[in-house]
Each structure stands twice: as C-alpha cells, then as structure tokens.
Length: 424
Image (tube, rainbow, N blue to C red; front, side, top):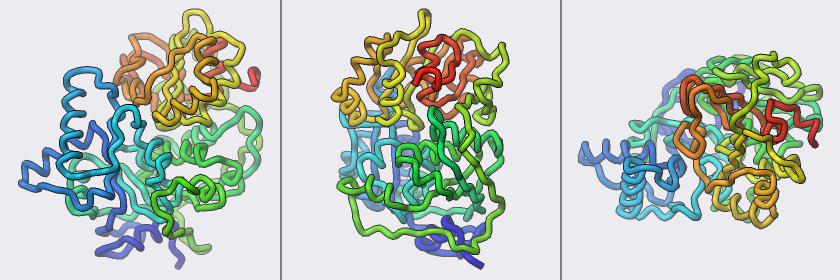
C-alpha cells in the first residue's frame, strides 16, 4: 500500500510510532511560528513548570501581528512580554514593527518555509505553509509550549482527502473562488482532522500567492493540514529567497489510500460569495437573493488569506480611475511591511487614495475583530478574510460576506455586492 504526501512528510520526522493514518506519533518539528497572542501564555506555562530556554533559537520565527501597533494596554503588554522572551532566548528571526507582517504571509515571503519541513504555529491558519510541500498545522498555547521546549510534538496522523483541480480559470475568477467552492462542498467540518492533498493541472496556472490562499483556508473545512506538490513555480518563488537550499521534496505514491477524492473543474466557475455565518455558504453572485444585496458599509481587503501584492494589484486594476461608493468605507491592509513598500513603490497607494480608500500598516486587525475596522451592530461588510462567523469581525449582528479581492474591489465601487467581471 502506498503512502500519502502527508504520511511521507511525517514519516521522515517520526521519533516514535509509525506514520500511518490514524496512528499517534511523536515527530520532530523543523520550524515554529510565534506571535504575540498565543505565545505569551505558552511562555508562562513553561515558567510555571520551571522550564526555561528553547530547543533551538534558530528554528523559531516570531512576529507581532494581531494587534500592531498595540491598540491598548493589554496588547502592549503581550507584545512587551514577547520581545523580552525573544531577547532572553537569543531568537534572531524576530520581525519587529516596520519589518513585520501577518505571520502566514511573512514566513514564506522571508524564505523560512522550504519543502519537506514540519512546521507548527500558534495560530490555526498555519496550514497555509502546505503550499510549499510541507506538513504544517496550527496548535494551541499548550502544545506550543511543548514544542518550543523540546522541538518535538505528538500528532495523530491524519487521513487524507485527494482534491484534484482541473480546467483553466476564467477571467475574473481567482483562487479564493476555488477554495470557497471546495468549502461549500465539504462544509465547515467535512474534512475534520484530515489532510487536504491538492493535485491537478490548474495548480500549475497559479502563483505561490494564489496557492497559499487555497491552503490557508483548509482549516475552514475543519482540516488538520493541506499540502501541494513542489514544482517549477515553487522553485522560482524560493530562488534567492529560501533560507536553506538543501530541502527534500515528497509526493504521494500512485497507490496512496485516500478517505475521499474530490474533483473541482474550474472551467465554468464564477466569482463566489460566502454569505454570513459560515465560510461554506458559497454561492455565485448571480444567485444571491435580493435580501443579500444590501448596501455595504465596509469593504475590507487584507488578511493572511488575501493581503499579498498580487491581491493588491488586482484591487488596483479595478479601482483605477474610479471612486468607491458614497457612504461606504474601504480599508486596505497589506499583509507585510514588504508588501506595503512594494505597493507604495508601484503607485498602488495613489490609486487607493484617489478612489477614497484608507491604507493600514500590516496587521490581522479587523479579521478577528481586533481593531482597524471593527463592525457595529447591523453593519454589512464584504471581506477578503477567511471567516465570517457571527461576531468574528465585530458585533454579533453584523453581516460578513467572504469574497475574492476582485469582488471586494468591484463591490467597493458599486456599493453593493458586484461581479468583478463587469469592472475588469
């Protein structure tokens, strides 16, 4: 019996146990991601047990990203505790404000993610890194404490779902639409504690940024992880960027066993919208009911899902020469300081300003209802983020629709949810 991509990755790092689906194993972890929300509790847990130091300061990457710059005393103290811990432990891969970014965009951008790794992060969307052929998953503060001290962690080896994406994307349709389509089929728990293993000709048409949008939202289907094969697109992205060049590339055996197989043909896919309450509520714009076409109060473009330079260029292509609708506010949040600088240098900020948008520094911000765009009761928001659960971005009575950056930009101009194909 052949092995899945996920089984091979975990088998190469197993300390004890056998890396077959359903088994419990202890595995070495190559890289740990930390930010200012979940890491301070992990640090405190270790201190409470008299445990000091980290397993390897060179294999930990740290950035404040959720509430930056600090929005209140509590967030300032979290960031202070994180800085102190970094200094005490000699962690060199620390990205302070001005060189920081949303963690899941920053680590690949700065070359920390390379094929063949095992990566864990104190954040659920750590599954993003699977776009590079790694096993990557999010953990809570307790498991984060364990891996920071030992460099190892236990896993139940997940079963895998094979997702094959075929066809050529039509104009105006993007990777965000692909993943919303997939989640609408799976449901928010349809891949619970399973790995999504992506295959198919369409992946070769997608940039690494577009691929990361897809792997980022594996958790929205309940998945433990997501993974894609390494190809020339991966190599091109890593060239001159990767911190290490001695990586190992794995892929599933032809006779690997999957718990389920799904094919998504994107040839006739249209721009999708996930209506409020669940990321799985995906439907075409044309099929929206009149009750869904409410005047939009806020358009939010950013997050670890869609705040990269590729996304901002698409937004700018639609906003150029246009103004956002009266009574609507549009907030654009580059995912990292580097993306901010690149967007500025390319003149995108001028386009955003002329259109009537506001541009923020890199932060998770309003995605989790933190700040920089929190919603009031009854407000309607169209967002490029990954979750639209009630209360996620502010008041529980606010309504959040998930879309691609193109659909978000078109909506900002229209004032109501709009098809980006009418504006491209």
